[in-house]
Length: 417
Image 1 (spheres, one colour):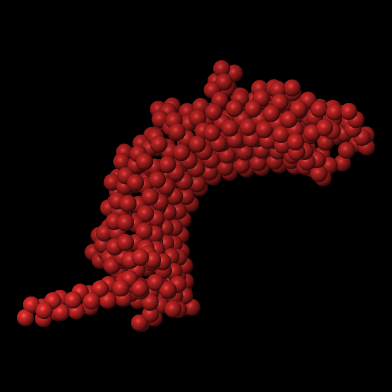
Image 2: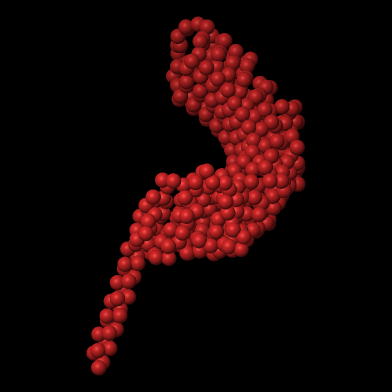
């Protein structure tokens, strides 16, 4: 009798083990069923064609499974809804089967929100979700209340949606792991940030029309702040709002009309290592030299395509830690005299300007790379090379697309780069 029970137990264990092995060799049944239900919503013709009955969903398009457990860990459903359909509401409860989901991309599907009382709370059960892409949809300001319990979320994309006016993101207050937030290309006049997002490192607010930055003080840990293509003429920017940004690595102000005093406020109070101001209109009068002396942390300055007056080189001369400077296509003309204060500069690009003459000071002892393409230099090449001889570390020089006024060859040390 005892041996009979042993045999039964062995058979039971064998069947159970076989079931486990068969389960991990393919996708889980409840997840396969959930995916087939989702296919009715993500119904763009010729997309998700291999999502069929009895198939192994781990082998399907847009699906990634854990190789050990067979659980779905990533769904890439961007641009899979029929484009001819109008904005729609998604039943988020269909995602409740994916307990191990780590990445979910729902971008470009004209989703306006979640079906009321049918799923917004279910989406919160995705406790392992780290990356959520809802960009290029039609979500409005109410979306934040549906995301507040995604406790593992690290990256959230809400750019190119229907966020408007005063946007309160307090629904994200409990997302202590959130590191990157994208909200560009919305119509945001003012942002209200919770104090809980103290781990946020990357914030993208390009082209949102923001004119009140006061609440940004709640997130002092930012490493990258992108405020490109905004109307700074109305922005409230004071020391009270910006003084807490002590860890900024990169500040982007591309495509903006900027008064020099506002740039001074941004740079002095955020102390970025990289300052990007491509395609900007810079105007105004420089502050006192004492004020300029605070610009000591910037190591990279990119002004490509910006409208600059040559007198602003005094402003650039204050960046004493600068090692990379790019001023391509800045409509500069006249005599360009580089200040000796840039004694840490290693790379310089002044291409596509109309410069009569370059004067390089003896302080540029570390300059290794110099690009002067198409600068329309009116000076004789012999005079230019004589000036370049004061750059002892120069290794790479590009003078392409120039028409010099003489053909004097170089002698002595002028060419020993």
